[in-house]
Length: 110
Image (cartoon, rainbow, N blue to C red):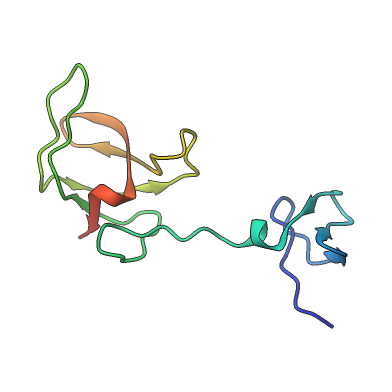
């Protein structure tokens, strides 16, 4: 018996293969095997990031309508999210600035 991934929608373990797609009998989701793989988030240095990590901004960031975020700014308790715009995948609160979305390519793990 082959080792199939759990359903990405309902996490059911009863997934079966129907040719080129995988099907979940509990929620009816049809998906590709690569869709079930969990995304790995890496910083500018290639270190794997996780929710709750502390990161440091590696370059000055210009913010429209506000002061710039300086290189070396420490950001605590980040949250990794699926990017709505396809680019910004870190949701965080920057001290003295507020809520912000960042790219993993402009931070390094502290």
